[in-house]
Length: 144
Image 1 (tube, rainbow, N blue to C red):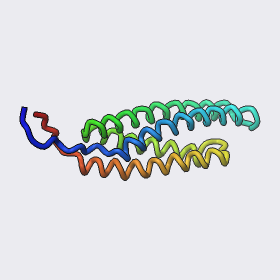
Image 2 (cartoon, rainbow, N blue to C red; image 1 turned 180 degrees about the vertical axis):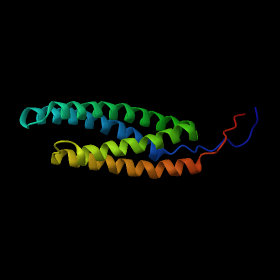
Image 3 (cartoon, rainbow, N blue to C red; image 1 turned 30 degrees about the vertical axis):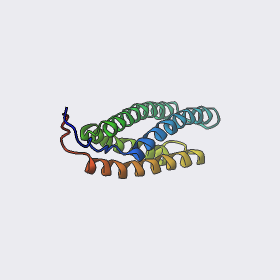
Image 4 (cartoon, one colour; image 1 turned 60 degrees about the vertical axis):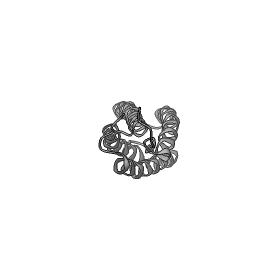
């Protein structure tokens, strides 16, 4: 075993904290959206096809968001560029879905505008930290 300085820790603590906070926030977001869909379906003239579409897209959004957070955390903690790049690529569909629920769904409530705007702010900060991580992580990690 070679003696000397240990390799520098390059994983980004702010990115990891942001991914954990985003995971908790998205869980609350998902529950809030389900409750808001129940509220809207009971009180508003919501077409069944539109309600089904919005719910299916919400569950697809859940799957994409879980994968994005998983790969982002894995790439950050292991200092690997590939999982971080996958997470960065999944940030696009996540942002598109947030904009969909912010502007384009059948009925948009003020509460939804607020929670989606907060989610988009999370995404902007994560995008910046993804780019910093991709630039700072080594291309090849060599273990002794």
